[in-house]
Length: 128
Image 1 (cartoon, rainbow, N blue to C red):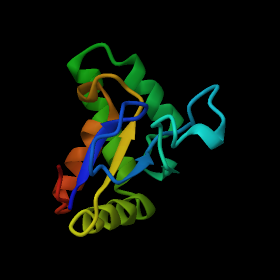
Image 2: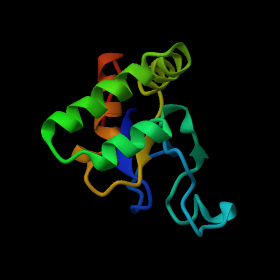
Image 3: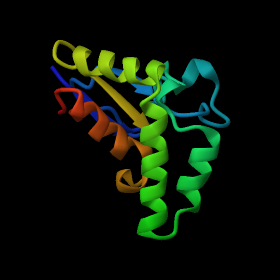
């Protein structure tokens, strides 16, 4: 049992389980009824997405210092009680269930899901 960190819209892997979209907005131009069938996500959970302002900061980051500023801001958002409780819940579920969380970004290293991976690890999540 484990949590996988995935790119939403990519083909699912065997044993991936429920796919959770940790994104601010649903995929554009895709009917809600097609989200799961087209491998976007089964459940939308924007609670773990960066705020709109923080997403803009990530997209505008040109230097390592700017990216690190985004990471600090996103981590601060995820330290809020609701987000922190959600992260702990997912970390605990990963010990007994297979599921995945993800975002649309092509490069995980320049995406909030890289930070999400770290935050889950810090809470004892079992990662695939």
